[in-house]
Each structure stands twice: as C-alpha cells, then as structure tokens.
Length: 496
Ligand code: HEM
Ligand SMILES: Cc1cc2nc3c(=O)[nH]c(=O)nc-3n(C[C@H](O)[C@H](O)[C@H](O)COP(=O)(O)O)c2cc1C
Image (cartoon, rainbow, N blue to C red; front, side, top):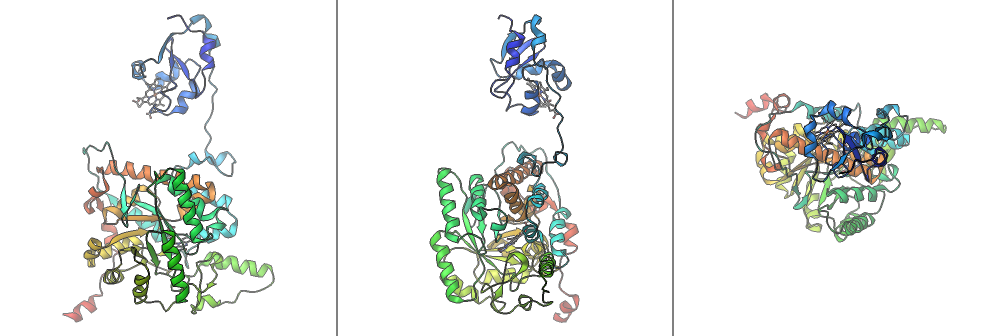
C-alpha cells in the first residue's frame, strides 16, 4: 500500500469521514464512531490527526485489531506528518457555567434535571401552578423521600444480557411499565399543550392519561394521537386513557363520557381524591400578591375553600371553575358510571386499604394509589406506604386488581421498587410536565429515554430480564413497614 499523505488524512476530520493515525498507520474509523464504547466524541476530537498518544492513555495497542475489517488504510507518509490535523483542546463546560437558559437536551441525564430548566423558562404563574403542593408541602416531600427508604437486594450471576421492559396496562401493551400521568391546563406549560405531549408519548411507545381539565378538547387530543400514529406507521403501542373529573350535572357527565367513548379512549381513570380542591399554598400567595397589585384584597375564605357544591377547579391559580366535581359524590356514583362506560375503570387517588377493598367490591379493574402529587390532602400517605398497607391487610386486592402508583417517581429504579411490591405500572407526572415546558415533545421523548435506561440498567443490576421476575424479596422495605398504619390496639382488644 502506498503511504498516505498527512494532508489527505487531515481532511477526514468529521462524522461523515473520520480517519486517525495510530502508531504510523491510518485507520478509517467512520463506521466505528457509533460503536466505540468510550463514545464518539473522544474519537471525533482526534479525527484527521495522530491519535497515538491519546489512544495509549486508555488502551493497549492491540485494541486496533477490534476495528471492523477494512479499517486499516495503510501507513502514513512519515514526511507529511506535519500536515496532520492538530486536535484543539475543547474543554467540556458544565451546563450551569454556559450561561445558556436551556442546556442542550442531551445534557438532561436524570429526570429531576428537567425541573431546573423548566423553572428558568416558565412564566412564574405557570411554574407555581406546576410545582405547588398542599399546605406545608408535607405530602409532596413524603412522596419524594419514601422511594429512597426502600433498598434493593440484588441477585448476581444471572445472565442479564437481554432485558424486556414491556408491560400490559389495562390490556394495552406498553413499551414500559410507566405512563404519563394526567395533568390539567398544559396550555400554560407549552403553547401546543396536550397534543405536544401526545406526540412525544407516541414516538416512544408509552401510554398517556389525558386530563378532563386539558386545555385542548378531548377529541382534538385524540386526533393528534391518530395523526402521530399514522406518522410512525402504526409502529407505536401507545394508547390514550381518559382521566375523569365527574361533572356535577349528570347530563354533562353523560355527554362527556359519550365523547370520550366515541373518541376511542381505552380506559377511564376516575379521580376520587378531589371532593374539593386542596389548599394550594403557593398559588394562594400568588393570588394575594396579584390582588394587592391591583388594589383589591383576597377574601380570607374564598368560596371554593368552603367546598360548596358546583365548585371545583383543578385550575391554574388554585381557583375554582364551576360545575366540575361535587363533594357529595359517593361510591354509589360508580354504579351509573359503570352503566355508561363499558371499558375498564381505575380509581385514581386511593389512600388506604379499606378503600382499596371497596374498589374491588364495586367492580373496578384497577386502583391508582396516589395523593395527587401532594396537591390534595395535607399529610397524606405516600403511594408506597398505601401499597404496603394493602399488601398487609387485603392482599387479595393485589391479586385481583391492577395496581398503579404515582407521586414522586423520578428514577427508573423507583419504578422497579413499585413493581417488586406488586404494582402493575406507575404514573409519572411533573418530570413530563417540566420536560414539555423545556423542550416540547423532544423533552417528553428524552424523559422516557432517561427513565427507561435507568429501568433497564436497574433490571440488570437486580438480576432480572423481565418484569415478571420482580419479587418482593428483591427489596428491603423494613424502614417503611415500621411506619405503616396498624389498627388501634384498643379497638383490637375490644373485639376479642
Ligand atoms: C480506534 C480504535 C479503538 C478501539 C478498538 C477502542 C475500543 C474501546 C473499548 C473496547 C472500550 C471499552 C473499555 C475498555 O475495554 O477499555 C473503549 C473505551 C474507551 N476508549 Fe477506546 N477504542 C479505540 C480508540 C480510542 C481512542 C483513539 C481514544 C482516545 C482518544 C479512546 C478512548 C477511550 C475511552 C476514554 C474509553 C472509556 C474508558 C472507560 O470508560 O474506562 N479510544 N474503547
Ligand atoms: C400541574 C399538575 C396538574 C395536575 N392535574 C391533574 C388533573 O387534571 N387530574 C388528575 O387526576 N390529576 C392531576 N394531577 C395529579 C397527577 O395526575 C399525578 O397524580 C401526580 O402529578 C403524580 O405525582 P408527580 O408529579 O410527583 O409524578 C396534576 C398534577 C400536577 C403536578
């Protein structure tokens, strides 16, 4: 082979054509860029140059034998070495130091990273709406911290080469055992609102539960789904479910259910933890500030606080939109809903074992253990604590119903913990909302990638290759079990 001119090598300094010199030989590493276990970036930095010194910092020289056949192009002309490219020293900068408002989406490594970016781009009012919680924020804090109080008990040497992360949710196959939780009023989060979230979900094959309180109409959201499914040529298993805030007016409720059915939503998630709106402290502070700014004072007890009939709002600003949900709703209402809706029903917002049992008796297909992301009851239990209670006092519920959890899930490992303890799948709320705010549907995709990668890695490190292999003995739940509710001993004694 004739020696290759250094000036020629120097031209091949990019993704399309990438050559390097190693120990006086020229290698075409273009096709290897995406295969390199140390990443493409470090190779591209060296493209067109003599990479020998850098290479030797990391590898023995015989690693070159692992390059694809045909990569060896022959010796470099030693008289032309001066014409090789000299790599520039590019220092990677931490996102916080670049001064950019929005770091590149690839800088999002963990789901909580979205929160910081969303805060920097969202208008203050929208940020308050998304991040606020009830009262002192205790329920939200518990949601976040309880996941870290369960440890894994990993198994090793179990051949975890291929892992399968798929799971069926209400009979609908999903790529992953997590879905996007329903969140209202996404129009304040992103100009394209819910349809933009749907696009990201479909592209990644995850399900989404659409809120009654959506900015865009129920039918339009479904139409986006249909269009996006077409765009990906039906390759996505994603499905849309509907979260139902029961309108007080029965005729309106019937009409809404009719629309949802006709549009093709696959299941009804009835929210039951909202007889009235929780005390959204941060929204209230903002309301008071806004009111004072225009010279009026907020009433100390606003109408909606009293929980009057015809007053309910999942709404931005912690305010009431009329006609949504009645504090007088009871279990008996499930009977007429069942007549109107023949698809699966999940009760969203179950917070104790007794209600889990009732859901089974009333013929629901699933329950979602949730405290509404810490936005409703003050001092509510985390969904994990509720799950432990159900496992202890009415395990038959877990055998007979699909069990979902949400609240504070921020890592694929959290998903695994829930599944080890019997959950079918989990809902993820704010991380998706923040991802949408910061990056639109691209953020929704990234959030899914981040969680799914953590999930798959977690499965391998735990020693399982499919979700069905997850077992309670793979987690240590003792710290939380110590805090689980126990019947009052006096009550127990009086029963003897
Ligand atoms: C061109 C042929 C190359 C081959 C076949 C190759 C192969 C590999 C392999 C198999 C690994 C996995 C970890 C290991 O076994 O050490 C790796 C990691 C790595 N490689 Fe390369 N590599 C090549 C070139 C380079 C070059 C030119 C550089 C530097 C300029 C480089 C830097 C790295 C780094 C930093 C890692 C990550 C090490 C770690 O995470 O511990 N490699 N490479
Ligand atoms: C901004 C926001 C809006 C929400 N809107 C609704 C809603 O319209 N209907 C509903 O059932 N739950 C709603 N939720 C609760 C979520 O469905 C879910 O239970 C909760 O966000 C999960 O907790 P996480 O945000 O910590 O993941 C909302 C939550 C947030 C943060």
